[in-house]
Amino acid sequence: MTRPDAPKSDRNTHSIKDRNPDQGTVLDRIKMPPMSGEEALRRFNEDRADGQGSKSDLADLHPVMKLVALGGTLLMIVAGLLGVLYLFAA
Image (tube, rainbow, N blue to C red; front, side):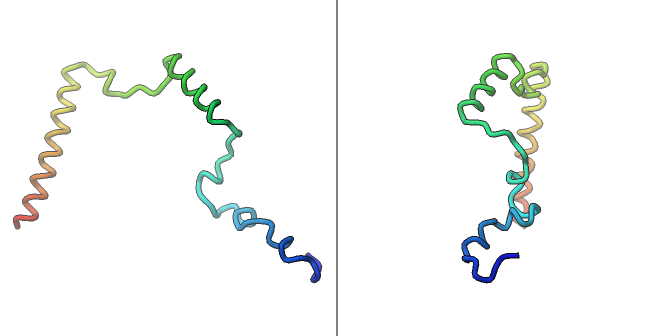
């Protein structure tokens, strides 16, 4: 307990997050080692140079399957737009 004559600023040195760790953002709760921006960029560039960088699944597909995926995507977009037009017309 604090003394009654203690200055007020000493009582409020801790934030709410220090008293209740469940409050705050998700990023506040993640324990990460300190890393500078330069270190992060260096690691990112090393991963990409080694070929470990994230590669899209679409790049691995056969060219015909790429066209099928593109056609299906465009068909879904057109169907969605026609459905919206139908709702407005009704």
